[in-house]
Image (cartoon, rainbow, N blue to C red; front, side, top):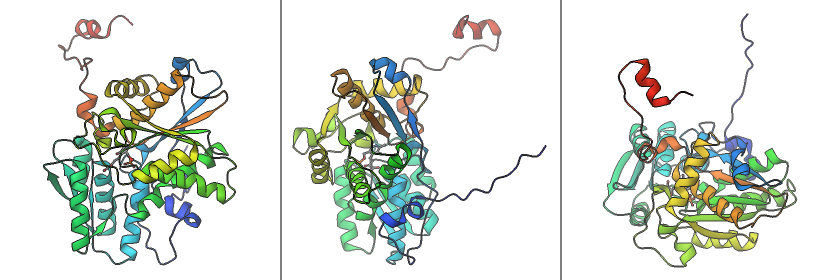
Length: 360
Ligand code: AN7
């Protein structure tokens, strides 16, 4: 018997949320059907933390077309760049912005150049930018220096900047908050998120506020941002000249949206804290090994932060916490393979195989 085919019209975030976005019928929509990512209820984490009435949900952004939340902002930035007559786009990136910019540029026909910190970018992101056909330039410096160069270049040449200081990026990224509210039927009580350049925490807060203004939700969440301890300028209230962390995506010492992140924190009554690389690594392995969700280390920073707060009994009874898992674990194979539990290699005999897997 033939399986019945159901026609499905897949749409991206611009079409789905156009009434909340600065687009018109003149905007050429460049989309890869981004967004509509799953909100997955945690299982093992509740048991681990002894949480009985609290529900933790993962907004898994690693399932976007290029494997991170950056696609939501890039569909907007590239569509608007095209509408404005641009011929080329450019960004600095710790990796995911570069991958998304390169993909949407490929789809639109725009040229794309990306500046990345040499040696400090996950391999999967580098190969994406390269394979989608962008001009990839390694800077012998860090992300903050790369961003300064991009600002200079785009102010002197007819190239559109598509980092999150481009306001259309934030506009696109706020759609993730809309999706969460649509799925839950209201806003969660808390929203945990990793903070690097601070564009995403800014975007979510704007999304929640606009949904409340539009009477789609009644309450607003407390925004909980987490930086890596070696790259925590907002927590320390000073620029970090040499940021360090295994979570290379958020290895940023001078966030572009610093001020907006503070607004999100203060207006929502939330907090911005930091987590160590050890805490990030624990969370990274826990959600992969116990929840079956493979997210990249930067994403695990938000989980680690939430775990830290839960252990201090920060959350009140009955609360719903949404934690954004910003990117796919597949992005960073080197980190994934950096542990003791390496893959075994044995002779092709049953006894050798059973020696490794044990008598299960
Ligand atoms: C997986 O790609 O900055 O606070 O250049 O890739 O909005 O910067 C990436 C950031 C969190 C932090 N999780 O978001 C870039 C870049 C992942 C990321 C962040 C990033 P923002």
